[in-house]
Length: 340
Image 1 (cartoon, one colour):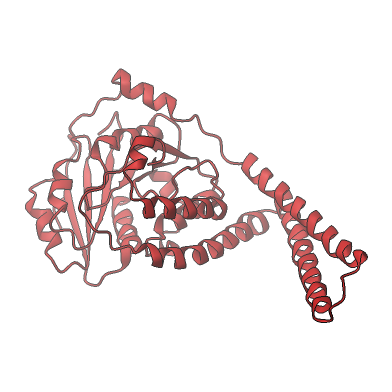
Image 2: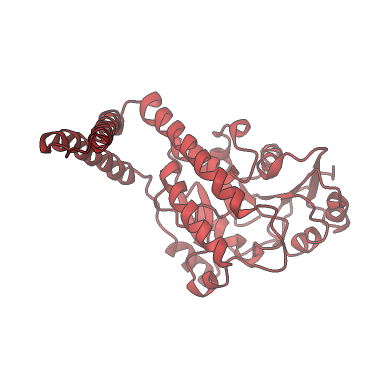
């Protein structure tokens, strides 16, 4: 336990027999339950996890690989059957530092947030250690994720080192979460719909010799499309379905103006270019005015959504708690479930 809260860690593991034992050995003593989900591995990942000899470990196994999101849904669903108050997601490759786990948990238990994410971009020296391709990909996808999820205050939305409060997790539709590496992004979209407070914790990533099964080129092709669909789904459900807000009015007016003005302007420009005649000034203005007005309405919708983001107390209080030694880690005294 940390303070008086039961802590569970969920670890999705695929072909992680070489690293899973070392990850389990470094978990803090205050962690009460560790749910390892072997996602159809063929290298003995589950056996390696059990061989670590940690009584807190519960091993679940998928016969076929379902993806990291599918493994997380299985692990989260099982964590909800325990006494866990806060559930943390860690990877099995050793790139997430267990020493940072208390800060993630305290952002929820002491900071008043519903969901905590690691932020690798806080420390510039640590950021330089990140591979350049991964840094650029994260920057591009991070911007798109902010737009799709509505969390413009989250600086590293692609970070998979996360923690969530139990009652917030119970409000999410786990079955609709994406089963692939898009899992964290789809969770952020759902969290925004229920107005959950999301905060960042500075957590420098560790990069060793591990090879990720996620290919950057494939991600850059697939993720933008998924983010577009997820963002449209969020806007429709949150602003048009749950209640009709001023943002819905701005969007329903601004989008037709931009699309109509832009389409009309493009049509007239192409038609006149093919005829080798200049486009009349009146036609230009007729296309430009609705486009500019619609753009202004969409910018107002964006500013209004940013202003409506759920407030949070920030991370300074948590950093102070860490330096003063409050809420020290204690070994769990609760009964552990039997290994599966």
